[in-house]
Image 1 (tube, helix red, strand yellow):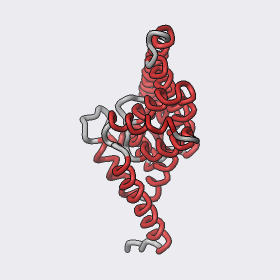
Image 2 (spheres, helix red, strand yellow):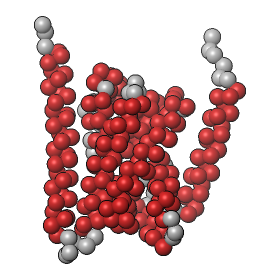
Image 3 (tube, one colour):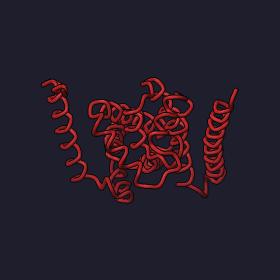
Image 4 (tube, helix red, strand yellow):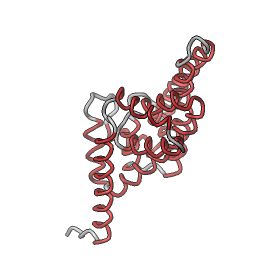
Length: 235
């Protein structure tokens, strides 16, 4: 016999859906949220506003929830605020990740189907169920690897972790590390490249940092692979 959902649960889900529908309608009307070039143009206008950094964090958080690429928002932060954008994209990324994680928990069955549909749009070497199992077995280290790899969109990762067995602490720390470092490097690189003639050394250094970051991701992947091979060896 299936358990009936409590009225409080239904009310919470309805309230969340209505809130996000209103936000989504507002963003569609006022921002080109599915057009990266248009989005950059719209957000540049914010440079003339008071409390622009606070406004940027709020807008960026909502945009990240609605599947605007995190790299696009990070690039905008670099263009608008230069190195201050590192802190802003870190806060925005963490806030959006926490909201998405909470939504995945509230709408777990729906979120599971969304993750499956989004993940299977492309052919993957690792089946989704195996990915869940690896996250369960390896915890923080594998969650950090999944969060950092380029082929996993930020928002899909948010939902995936929300329906997986990863702990909230591991989720927060891996998100903080990869957004602050990975997207922080993007902010640094864009802020340097925007004035390339005066910041040639800074641009080259940014490219070097990006290369080192992805090398670190590769190292984590190889370390996880070797650990798995050792576990599979017969005693």
